[in-house]
Image (tube, rainbow, N blue to C red):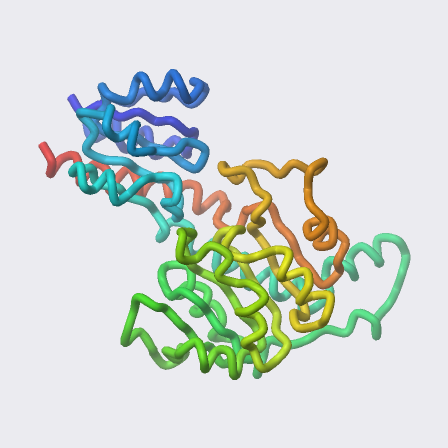
Length: 316
């Protein structure tokens, strides 16, 4: 019987789908990492989210392992290349939360452009300021999207109704332009964009890809949206750009100061740039929840279970 270790809690459909396929599942969500590492060698598959790292050492000890399932989009907590070199399949579920991320990015942008956070707080205090909260429209703006995978393409699709121009740059794709998206170079994005949105994975290549030098390439003053990973963006450089007006505003669902499991930030030890962001009314913040809807919770769990069932059945 195929044995699956579920290390993180997920929607019950994941467990139910694996059981229905005839797999044995152990739900060890509350066991410490050192104990889990000792257990892994007897399992054929592992299901994780973000708090547990699959390293070379763990892979070497996992003699029976055939598949690692990551419930989510990012794979940075798995040594994927090493796992695959050992014949271990690694699967994730970006198609499960792409709609949630796209809607959240649009929502954050609308909140920023229409001063909704500030206006809401003022009205609740009996302050009625209309001219001071005059908004900005998305229509006729040029939006540059970096990365055109599941998240970037879903965001672009949501923008169609706003009558804006959408430029997309993806280093690893070609011929993806269509009637509402223009396949573009970085130079074209630097030249034309009003709004920049990141939809890229986090790795060595994308670490701090958005920094002072990158921002300085834009001919216009811009708005920045980041729903990818916090460390794709240099927070210090973003703050400096906000202070001098090169960045007019930012929507950040992810922060470089998050814990590696994305579950917390240490308020007491937050550096000066984060202190600035927390007080700046030109910034909209959320706690890494763009892909965290009730619907995406179900979809990601179902997708991972189905992918693992397929791989395991075909590996037998």
